[in-house]
Amino acid sequence: MKKNKFIAKILILSLFLNITFPAFAEDTTPKPYDNDELPQTMKDIRRFEIITLGALPFVTLDTTLAYSTWRYVQHDFDAAYQPDIFAASSFSQEEQLNLILTSFGVCIGIGLTDLIVQIIKRSNKKRKAQINYDDISIIPISEDEDAQIIPLPSELENKNEEVEIVTENEVQEIQE
Image (tube, rainbow, N blue to C red; front, side, top):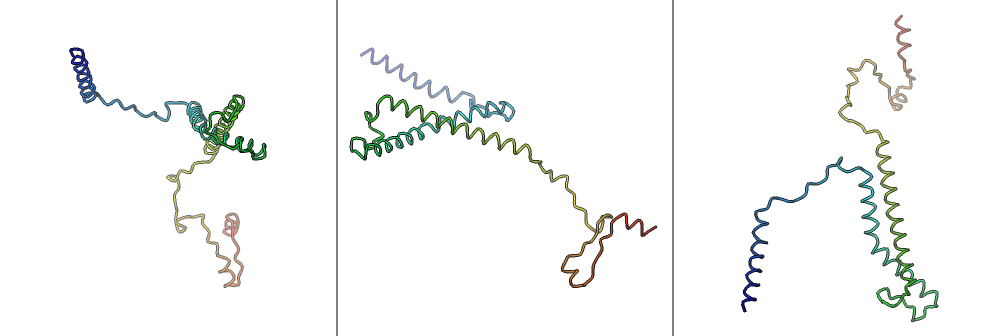
């Protein structure tokens, strides 16, 4: 009886401590990483890892299903080889090892493909010149000394005239 009361007191004390201490604790939410805190190589490796390991269950399921179906077809649709991917004894140890290794290979291929695509996208983005719209200024044609009015082809047909575009050098020759 004394032992049960002692255990009950310890449980109540631990419950009390577990409830009260977090109420007085500081905010322990971690600060997000800054963009410059990790090198791009580490970010790429982490993305490769996430995609490769994240694809593993799905690729393993697809590989098992494809192999089961192939084996079923190879044995002329015999009921003994009917695809049952969830049966524990449907594959030998060698077949299970081959399925896992094939799945790992396909997952690594998926991760490498994503890595290559991301590297190409990043290099293309660096190559493209970024337009700074703050540097663009619009000058009305009436205020621009070098501007020339070029008539539209429809205006030329209406006037039945040929308009010559005079260059700056020809203007200077005419003025002299």
